[in-house]
Amino acid sequence: MSDSRPDLVIYGSPVSPFVRKVAGVCIEKEVPYEVEAVNVFDPPAWFREISPMKRIPVLRDRSMAEEGIAGTIPDSSAICAFIEKKHPAPALYPADPAALGEALFIEEFADTTLAMAGGLGIFRPIYFAISKGEEPGLEKARDTWANQLPPVFDVLETRLAGREFFAGDALSIADITVACVLMQVALVAETPLDKWPGLAAHFAAMQARDSIATPYAAAEKVIRKALPTRFDLT
Ligand SMILES: N[C@@H](CCC(=O)N[C@@H](CS)C(=O)NCC(=O)O)C(=O)O
Image (tube, rainbow, N blue to C red; front, side, top):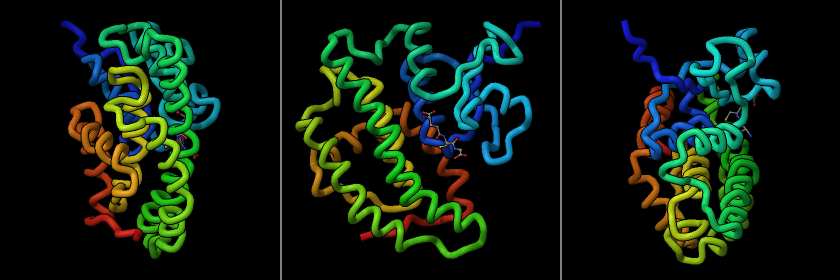
């Protein structure tokens, strides 16, 4: 009997923007993968062993090993770089050194500064509260939208400079990461980006891609059970 399971397993949940980022890279490259559910807030012992920072995602490449630390990679950035080496086409890291540097910076900026504001400042105060049967933390979310996110959007708008992609002239890890992280806000709130027209156009174009839309739809399925509609934070 042939084994039809994909080599790549992403441990985590599509509700994580970092899980969706890895899934998005797999979809762009047409690499089969599956997501295996792990509750990172109460993980099993085997997961703690492969996730030193107790974070999702962790990738397993079953072609390397089926259990234990061997064949696993924690951290979405490390995982995406691994997938790029293993499945080089289409390239999601620019060949040009300056464009590569920009792509890696934007990836890091989205993974940290944007994710911190959007995740800790908006997604968690709303969704985590609702999941616990509490009132959503709309005051914090509104303050984040009004005060924390605009300077972050300003940086993205300036660096995008009206272009189609953040780095070089093709889709890269930078575009995928910004879209996945920004969509964490879209899971719980409206995202009017009129003040940042370049970013708004980029975001709309990215949402139309299967690599962004499909993992996001899986997250929405989970979120909409507890939160049927998005909040207006303006
Ligand atoms: N830099 C990490 C960030 C991963 C991360 O923060 N994941 C969140 C879920 S979105 C997590 O595991 N949180 C667990 C916790 O806060 O205890 C990556 O890119 O993979």
